[in-house]
Amino acid sequence: MSGSPTSPAVVVGVDGSKVAIRTALWAADEAVDRNVPLRLLCAVDQDNTKPVDERDTPRLANAEMAVHWASAAVEATDKPVKIEAEISRDSPISALVSASRSAAMVCVGALGLNHFQPGRVGSTAAALAVAAHCPVAIVRGGGHRPQPSCQWIVVEADESPDVGVVLEAAATEARLRNAPLRAVTCWKSSPADQPAAGDCRIRARLDRRMARWRRRYPDLSTEAIALHGCLLDYLAKHAASVQLLVVGARHPDHVREILGAAGNAALVDFNGVLLVVGHQHL
Image: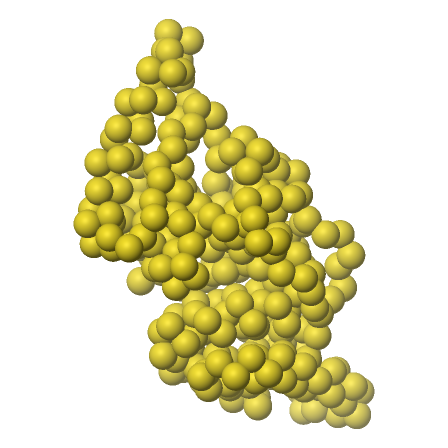
């Protein structure tokens, strides 16, 4: 289990925590939808220039157990997915970034086994979100799933050249999960602007952009919202009704803001998944 697979797969970082198991369960649908394996990767952060000795044995045993627990949880769902396992002696971030070069998606828990502050995003997940070469899904919460009211797939639709890629990813997720899609465009005004008039203008532009996806996917329920403010303002009010938030990767500082202290405060009630995707991920 220590090889370096390069075939496309949905890669899940596992560490034995409850959120890692929940992440594997969430990612199984992604692997089935893409018809690729689900690869469970556990990194033990060893010095891989030295041979394995007796001191490494407990860490390797723990890694094998973490992979086993996640694999057993997925197998219990009877989903038609091939499960692969990999144990890496690199650090978690190095192993996951390396895996992202050939992966269809990399999925990690917001916090791992050694963290005890719910509602936060750990350093591994935050670093991976801006360094990976494929879309990154960050699963929040512990061993429980979102409440039934958490129905929306929400996508940030800005003026970035990558917005079509981001919207496509969000539409794909909404159809996969049989959920409605809400596209949100945020804007900030000058003192002379009228927020209500600006909202109408921005929403009309967003409606025209969303028309393409409505024609392509007539079965998809969509909604366009223009928000005078920022995305974190919206999330602070509506996080409990969102199961998946899709944002672009083009602006790393914006991604870091969402994953940092301000985002953690806004997402305290968010028990869903953050998906970071962009043109550079294709």
